[in-house]
Length: 82
Image (cartoon, rainbow, N blue to C red; front, side, top):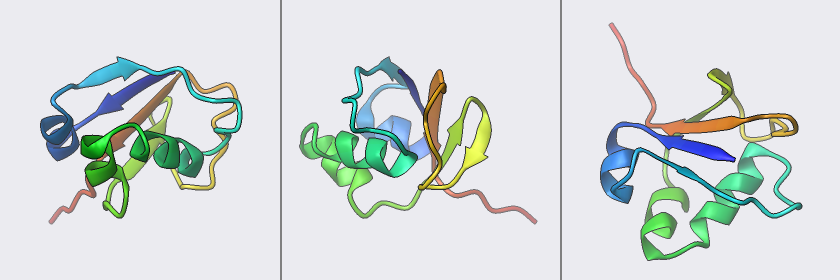
């Protein structure tokens, strides 16, 4: 699965994207977040308790959204506008 990181997440992780082999039990965005948070200390700092948004194949998605059939997951900080 291609995972893309934007803005402060990219800066904290030190990469803009990566290919990740997800475990079969990773079925939702929340499952992917939990998996990433267990990779190492840096990922834990970013994904455990962090505030960010997700997109599946370039469409905003909630934590409970299924990742079945998805080719790309993107994570980015919340956006504000005026």
